[in-house]
Image 1 (tube, helix red, strand yellow):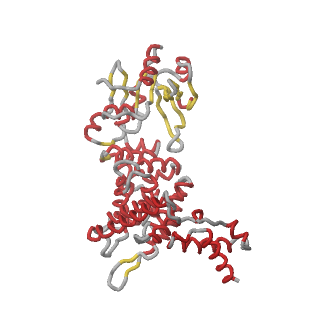
Image 2 (cartoon, one colour; image 1 turned 45 degrees about the horizontal axis):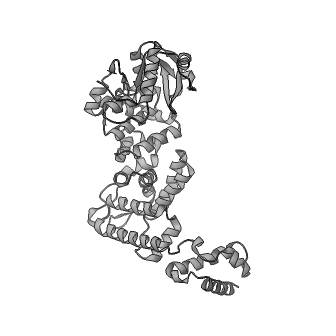
Length: 446
């Protein structure tokens, strides 16, 4: 079987071979090529030791010498080249206590996580597949190499990686591998938040964001996002919903566009409902104020996972406002624009559409028509350049200071009043009117 690999990767493999060493493309690149996909990057494994790798190439970077890895730069692209190795034991479920270089490619491949990632290739021998990777690709299965418990004990993140590959590739997780994840789930607590967040992001950005629910099925969610885990035990007994809270969240997430901010907002938008749940005398369940509780819990989740500040802020704005009814009128649209900003406003509408698609279909057309009407008003406001931000006013704080206003709250409150009037009547955004109106406000405030 001949695979079409990049010129740079092929050159590195051949250069090592010509220097008397074994060398292969390995891991995810081979998996992608076997599946007819173009790899994002290439890893190379070789019998050459790190010092020997460096002697073969002009430009190298010591990126992981202790673990046998050297980055070789070819035509401006870096390729990780790692010596055949085995790993004896792990101290922290990620980094091996000790490694040993080996001479046999088969010994190197046996230490890898999943069969689909344990294949290697070069033009001389074709694909080497000792552990059934091609069979598992054909069967659409994610299966560990060797004993699942051993693989997950070595690096507990592999449990999340199994779900990630399942989501990205549309594969199922092989039965024994899935059972081992359930057995070893608590080990995920040893893994850093940053590494966990990286895998969750990849699951959410896949074609199957709904697969994030596999975290609950396999017992991982309780250790990673317990606030979401309990949502699956929270019913929604009212005319607008047909799923429990957790299942509704998964459906809403699956309905979103491929946008990380939007998918995180969908995943967290209702996690405050279990706290707010109440039942009236007719047995109808309500969740009054759940948007506030959801925002507070979402902030806890995102801080715990070490989400970056800008993304966290945007996600929280969407969660807080996901349930706000926006009327299809210029003042209502502009008030929300003032609150969330022009970048997040279209995402908010998209989130509301996804949220409603995950509810009772009986009310869907009516809700989508209203949101479409809101979008039309929004597009008109933007196209006409209608003012909706304080910065859109033709007067500012300096102008009010010249009128005798004191710097601080008095100016801020006055500008908000002026903006409120301009939101309703854009034609009032003239210097003459706003100066006159500001003077009236100041006289009344004395």
